[in-house]
Image (cartoon, rainbow, N blue to C red; front, side, top):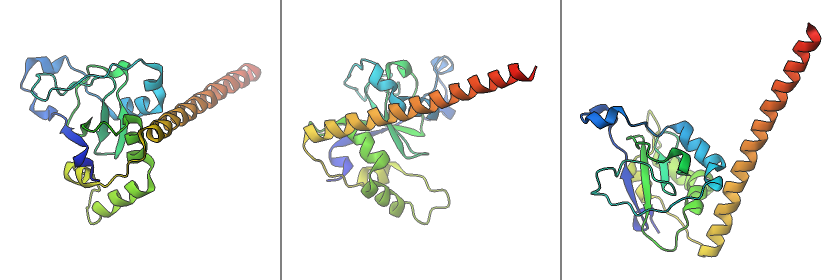
Length: 188
């Protein structure tokens, strides 16, 4: 089944056309925000799942629980409470799930880690001088859907792994700082 059969791809706003005065006060959702959301911030937050009305004035604003996809890095994540209300720019898209049989965490896992999906993306972007996934390519990607229970298990385990990896990196960084500080004190 193609992604376009089970979700809507809502491309972010072109911020270079900032003709509204409100745009100056808005903070853009960034690649760093996506990575932080992907590394488990979402697990700590109690996400509020909201229905996005495409005609709503703020449909470009991030809402906790939404799946966002970066066209630049070809990574997907789930918006956390920390990143609520940031404007989604044209380098991102909201992936609005229209199918009851698709779990958002599983969708992130498949888009980020699935060998089959990576292969489809690589083939679709061949010949490009600047390989970048387009909305049309994204919509045409094929996905296999296991049972919803299996999807939830895989999705939850994937985000748990991402969080565990992020915590291990953070611990290594703190240990390095501690050791370097101890060496500086010994050196004086």
